[in-house]
Image 1 (cartoon, rainbow, N blue to C red):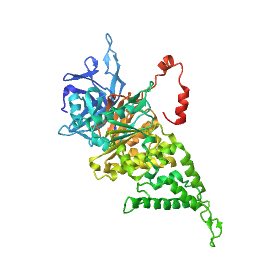
Image 2 (image 1 turned 30 degrees about the vertical axis):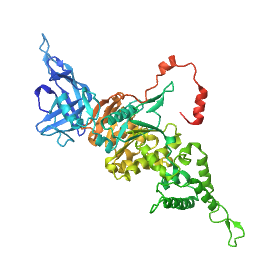
Image 3 (image 1 turned 60 degrees about the vertical axis):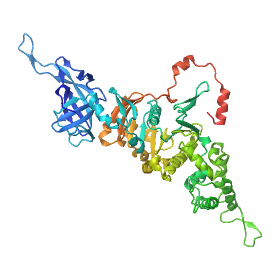
Image 4 (image 1 turned 90 degrees about the vertical axis):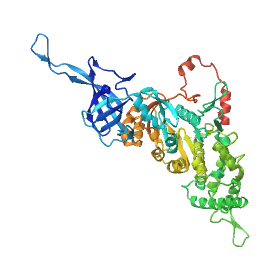
Length: 564
């Protein structure tokens, strides 16, 4: 970025660690609203635009975050026909800047500022050619997702390796455009990288739905996506870890919990060992993913719970474990009789160990037909069961590549919509499994080619462990002060002042921070085509022209069947 006197727009008047303040100069007619660089007219002080600061060897690129005016007194001037001097006041335009990085001697942008300017340093406008030069760092990969807000002629390309491989978060309040962002990122990822492997946890059926006429609609074309109903996918109980099974079937607070845990472990161990022998496995553990019959578990524990023969063998008496499993059996029967758990505890298709390979192929998009995107629809799963399903999906995603010798050639991305609903910040027993699964991906997934994308409207309610591992933050409009403060503590220190911009972002507009962008960037995502089912409902039109009646019987039937 050469120093051009024609691009000078002001001078630094205040220097702080995280921000700089500059006073804008005026032309002969007063305040100059624009400056021309080549054939381009640039609005001076536009929020989200870039400027460069020059002072000797110091060359810094900064982002405009605020523009204001301050009253300033003009020099004393005599009035016409009088010897008395008067002092006039006028408005001095002030801009606040956040330094983004340094421009080195080769004209290349580097993150971080080691040498700050002093007051009086020149502030220059930056043209499209210079900005394009910075963004060209990732343009060769062709992952074009939007346009710069301050200059729509400049395309914004993200680095897919950093974005997907080092985890990322999409944060924004409801209506800010999170689903748009997800759909856009996935659509363009598949267009550029047709061998992608993306799994989306869809909590509200936003990516596949029925319209008012009953026709199926989709946010992705049929040739790139497979939609799977979570209940029909059947992730069976025998794929759960022993710890997850204990959380599901045992109340750890009751007096006999230690006996229940020990006996349950022994029974499952025996059944898995039997299955392992059939499969000719050298060894099995409690967590080996092979089939065992839950009904046999119940029968074995019921035997231990009953009376025992006395030493003479002529009379049944109470033994040391008699009655110790009453609550366990009651809890197990309750789960077995709860139809909401049928997809987990009463599988119809996954009833043998050899069905696991087919499940995994469907899960990662290698089923028939092969698809780069798998959307797992959780909208039909009751709210209190969703954490259990999410835990299994997260663990399977990690375990798949953990045991995959070709994990470096087969990276996976798991997108967690509404992450605060099952990866909470606070430790709660019903979320222990899902939180543990997702935190394991966040901490260890990068090593095995498993990325995670956290999508949430309530960032301060999401696990800190997961968000802290994200290398890129795509922040949409956030107005809640608690959420803003939380995001400010998550992003790199040099970029924290940029969080103040979030309240003023439009729908689909984002402040991108982190490794997937060459510099902190405010830009607008392209509108996805087709768009997900996340548009706000038009109350005005529907209340004015909506139906006079609807089929309430059908609503009752869907409610009772738990089918949307």
